[in-house]
Image (cartoon, rainbow, N blue to C red; front, side, top):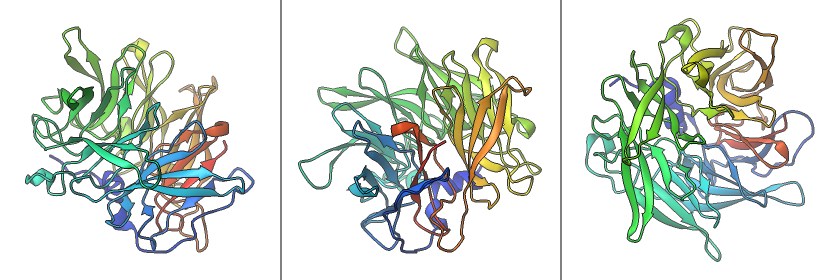
Length: 428
């Protein structure tokens, strides 16, 4: 099995690039169209998190919830909450700090919140730490956090991955159906060690995992690193880092069958070159079932990836909406993250690097009849990077989320590299 390239490694092990640098954490909002830092993580504070790699989610009161891959007393990650205050500052509350074993380590996932206020997510490592080469750092878990009367939230481990048929190392988060079941993927484990799609169902005796599909056989998808998304008919869509006709990654669809089984269909096999390869970002669907996403690399000449569309009515034929060119080819971005639709059907996202300072960008794709692809690309913000005293972000490695007031909220792993990362708000 091939090694993951630098961007996958950066997202998985981002803190290997981070050095300790204490920061002032609460920041006032500021005017203008630049991102507003809501929270700067403090590498000098063992109780705070750092290196956030998840997209924020919100509750009805406008509080924000997310995970940080590192930090906390054990250094293996936290779940945190940011609450707006009347002064304009945001207040952080660390809801849970992971300990590695048996409760999990390295939470990369975007959280899911149920109607009772419980939070659900996954950790990439940790858990019961079975003695297998693949799981030398633990195979990861699915967890639930329940609010308590006061103090830290209570964690319940819903599933310990073993590295066997049940999967190993879930890289991204969960999606919930109307019945309260959760669905996700693992990047390892399964029949050939290249991951599974799974379902967790609540039973009278606890939570039960059902493997929906084992990836990696022949030209199937392999090593999925993104979360799944439902369509209106109950099908699931995702991306895989390997697999497909050229073993360069896929977009796949999982379809439930009347028998209770699921079938996997590769909608697109990446070919490299101008087509891109090795997607790790999740896909999004429009109202008619077209699939949008990002690939991560193109090769030696333009190594920064694409944004693509798969048209459902045309057999999921691919259209490249934008090809990234990085810092040294016109100040473009590099390595796009997951996309988000606004109410008008425009797409917004971050790119992890590239831009004028090679610190990443925020961009928009606007529907138009004036281009051959039907979309116009524009850069909304170039992150500043490592300028001394800057509180602007650097290296955004997660999708953004639309939150209160139609603003976009996201995370970066650094404000002024190296640092502990930040949560930001951006008004498009």
